[in-house]
Image 1 (cartoon, rainbow, N blue to C red):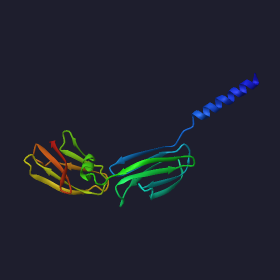
Image 2 (image 1 turned 30 degrees about the vertical axis):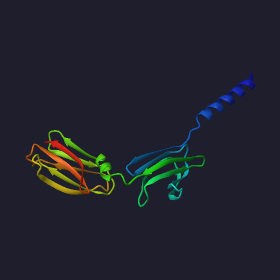
Image 3 (image 1 turned 180 degrees about the horizontal axis):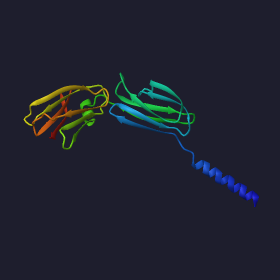
Image 4 (image 1 turned 90 degrees about the vertical axis):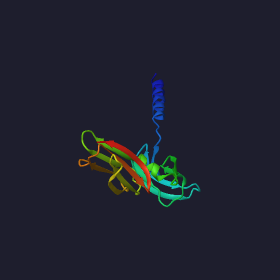
Length: 193
């Protein structure tokens, strides 16, 4: 009887340890042509991060020591459009993801998705938030309800920002916010005051 229990115990421990075998995970989050690599290893260890182009030429390599996981921002500069391979090498695994870079898309369309207007009910306050983070200038023009430009400024989207406009002195019942990038209208929104 004692022998059977020992064998049964070994079998249960073997099954339990086999079912808890985890693999490291990598996830890529993209915002336009900027990426964030989220890596979670199964255990604390050093890893190698490598990015290669379509010809398998290394465009970036980095060693990260004794990590328990990380979020690595990846910004491409001075590289061709195309697919790039992200490779994370641990002591037991090689994880890969594809990063697709396309600078030929309209930057303005991408930027419009990252510019938000919010109004504070009851107050003549409008908040313009930008999450574009691409270093491009945008021109913000505010028009009254007769389409007269009452305010004009240029902002750089080098970092995420929030700009608050107090419109207490505006006599109009509504204003229109127009955001331009390189002369092209990318965001247009009327706000009731």
